[in-house]
Image (cartoon, rainbow, N blue to C red; front, side, top):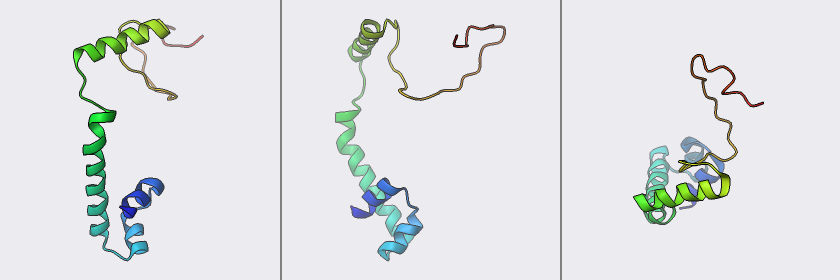
Length: 96
C-alpha cells in the first residue's frame, strides 16, 4: 500500500520506487496496479456512478438554473481548452 501511495503522491517512476524499497520494478508495478484497481472498484460506484436519464436531466436543469446554459451536462473547470474555429465563422469564436 505504501508503494502505491508514494507513487500516486510523488509521480516517481517504478524504477525509482523499486530502488528505494529494494524490490523488483515489476513487483512495484504489480503492487501499484492492484492497489489502484482495488481503490477504483471501491470508490467508482460512490464517486462516479453509472449515469441514467434522470441524472442527466437533473444536471442539465442545474446548469440551466444556475448559469443559464441550456442543454449542458458537463463543464471543465479552470482549464483552457484550445479549439479550432469552424471555417468562415468570423469572430464567433473570439472573446471580446
